[in-house]
Image 1: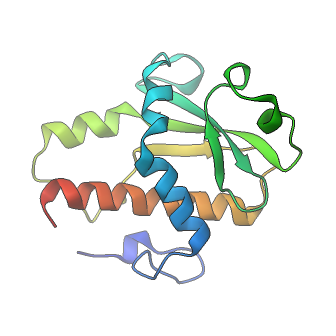
Image 2: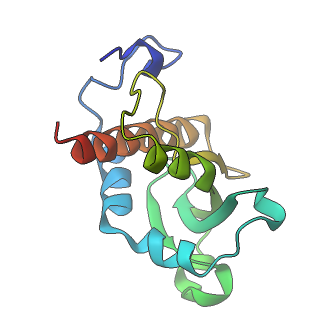
Length: 148
């Protein structure tokens, strides 16, 4: 498997041991709470065709996910905490449909369940941690489906 396509601008590859923060972010996605939020969202609209937004509150400096959900459904101690900001993870159903239809997945292409993260006010470190976590999460999911 060619990991060069998964390298960061700093020359690190996703094969390197992820930091504790990145593993924490991956664990939040592995827990699956985001799927419940995704299931309540409409497809299309502001997120774009074949896309939905999964909202969350994240630590503005590290990107650690505090909780998934829409602001009106979350506890005030989270939404009013100045250390947290709202983030939207844009889920691309199109990529999922292509993966289901094509059993011979070409893993040389970077996995992109989430097309992008919108997090106004997040630090560069937070955005990079989220990016790396989502790439690793997607790769681990694909590997588990292929029996790797």
